[in-house]
Image (cartoon, rainbow, N blue to C red):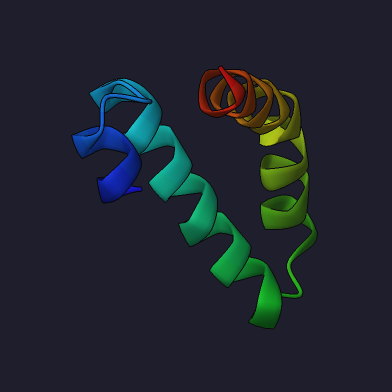
Length: 60
């Protein structure tokens, strides 16, 4: 993420959200808590949009 941010492909806010996404991903590996799973599931649309926007920026 730091390389994408340093190169100007993503803004600071996007970098922070992507880092949160990585933290959530790491939580899901060993978490068997339904509430946590639902919270993470609710964030998926945000992360899909972030990935799409980042991909478009990298592609151009």
